[in-house]
Amino acid sequence: MKVVIFCGGLGMRLREAGDDIPKPMVPIGSRPILWHLMKYYAHYGHKDFILCLGYRADAIKKYFLNYEETSSNDFVLSNGGREIELMNRDISDWRITFADTGVNANIGQRLMAVRNYLRGEDTFLANYADGLTDMHLPSVVDRFESGGKIANFVSVRPNLSFHAVSARPDGRVCEIKPVMETDLRVNCGFFLFRREIFDFMRPGEELVQEPFARLIEADQLLTYQHDGFTASMDTFKDKQHFDELYSRGRAPWEVWRKDAQATDAVAGAGPAPPLAADTGHEEKPGVRYNGADTFLSPVRVRPSEAPARVVPGLSSHASPLPTAASR
Image: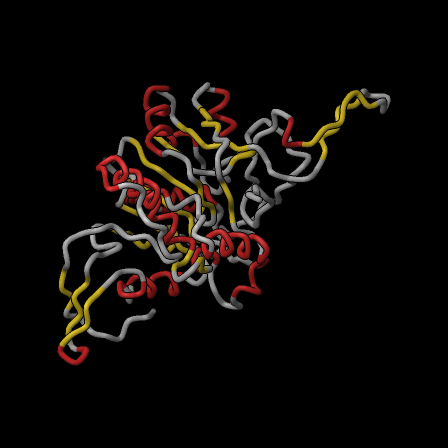
């Protein structure tokens, strides 16, 4: 199943992390958040990516064109440095389509721009480029396929300190309680679409607004409610939170590590030893690389620079989300 990732974010509130870095390229450890997201999908067998590029598209292209395998994989250096034997690879089985979809385009426009690259696909995945999760993706796919609807998104409880208020028209308060204890959920992406989604879209429209309203009217929109880890990177404080989890070896989104440890334990080898806080990799037989050696080397759901990411039909008093065309 192909994976469309919206990579047009400007990252204006992340400028402390780097003045000229597009949002998907903000690093967690030695790899950008985009890589972590793609690694998540690849772990579950979805390795055909379409990147909808916008601001600083050149930086994303150059990163993968000059991808440095040695920064996250074991290798043997020999022959005076002229030969490198990689013990494993990260992205050798990934297929990536780089599509320039405009600097100022919104999410709906970006998706429409790559429609031709989705020909022949009955179902496809899509997502924002700045969020990570520990969610079991096959469960989401199975639920969607059995539901028979056209679209699905994942919704989570907003982990915010605001209080929700219920009041009568005359102002008398009926109830006040933490927003986390309400039934409110917000859209965090991780979309699944059937190809019929394009029948509900019009030029220039934002994906989660008019098209989702039409889907709701036609009873063709589902949500998968996830209560585990989900976090997104909007501010420098968010980046610090990701970095802290990663440096302590407690990155919940690294499902590829957890599954590898579980497999080792079942095989009778006992729990796998703690892994260093580098990027995850899949164990494979050694492969030789003879190319050039000039490579380039708690949980929040938040307001974003992107279009309003709220569950259609709900009004999130805790998280007003402005509409913009930066993701």
